[in-house]
Image 1 (cartoon, rainbow, N blue to C red):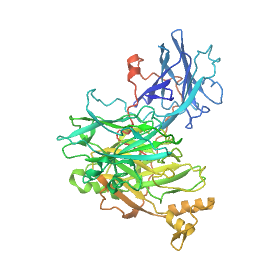
Image 2: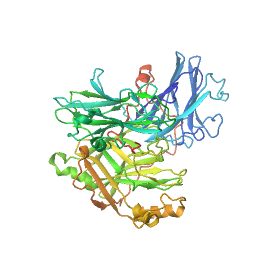
Image 3: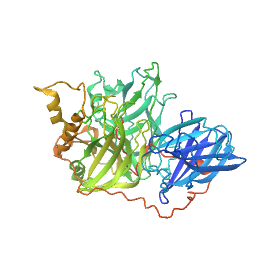
Image 4: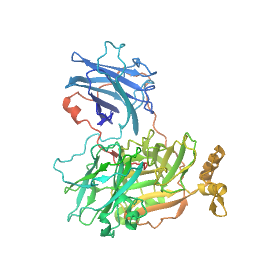
Length: 587
């Protein structure tokens, strides 16, 4: 479930039926007037949205499927593809339940697809007098949701499940637009093995828009205990070397703005205790303070729920994509620019060198983020692809409408089996039309990243499966290097010819440099080796819509309406796949 507005007056619940490819919604809105909800064409605008308008009058519910073709009352759709399941008014609120197919095969209905979906909403304090006489909304807006990549049933977590917290303690947020704040901890050490089964954010009251994302990094076990008191800006020059080395290393937990709690599926858990799991960690919080307010105090962090009842598999997290460095360049003035990062088969096959790791990895969760650090983020879309022996297999995850300010994990409806030697390709799309100079890879607020976080089982030693494409350097040396020194970069004026040359320079480079890293930043045997970019000889072809020639006039309800069902419909977690956690690292 999710609130669509900051005032928390409009809450939407939903549940999906993978077999029927249908979805049931329940809108709970603080009004006794009409309620509107719709699926936009991808931009969050009213025009082009597939909407419903419904209300309750004299204990009778009303709902019509409409299409917004102008900034006016959306006309009733000739083909009614939404089904009213239940409607009522209760304690000053209107509750309307309705359902539809993911794809209605109606040109005036927008398909509900995997990844981020931009929805629109509106309501009024009064009921309409008729279907054609509906007063203009008193409240309206748009929001991002992940509708399909969710758990179909919530993983079971007993109410008395023990937990521990990693949190700041009344930290004063700097009055700068972007700050990465780091605090080191000794992770709880238990004498017996346990599984972490849920991780949830704990956000200080009033700081919902200030805390942009959080990461927990695992440090080397020889991390100096004297550094446990460290708490300050992560990348400051006076930060101890051990803290600098750990920051940005092996991620064991993450959360992004707009996300909820993360549940491990019932057959997996993150192992701690009995000598396994991290000993020392760093909590990194990205504070977003564009108005540079002073005096903000924060005690946000992450809460870890754990159990003694061990699950079948230990879960791990794999980073895949571009290594964070200057070599990733995005030219200015571009409506669309694609950059590609690789997790090479040279890296995935090293996990088979040890007998206990010869099983295929099962990816079940994906968190997608196109990282840009700050609200100026350029990322607009991302997909994570899977290639075996030159043949492209079904995508691990994709997000065609990536939203930097809504970072949820995506639950895969089907697990992805990664065999040793398989390639993972991460495509990141950016829009830089308002930029006047190139944007390069890096950790600063003015820089970008391109990677996916993939949750998988069983856990292996490999933590980072990244690469670097140095194809831009011949271009760079040609235009901005004189006698070994950089001159004239960034240029005062960027031209389309420079963009064309940069693209050609990347395209002509057949090699990538491997950045494969084990847990706690231990470099793999192939680290810094060069290898050929993975080649796709047989592209993946997505199945068609299979829309019938004759289309039924209405859909069928997903299930019987019930007040109890309304209370339990939830989008479970900040997770993505049936285990695939993709994050176009927007961190």
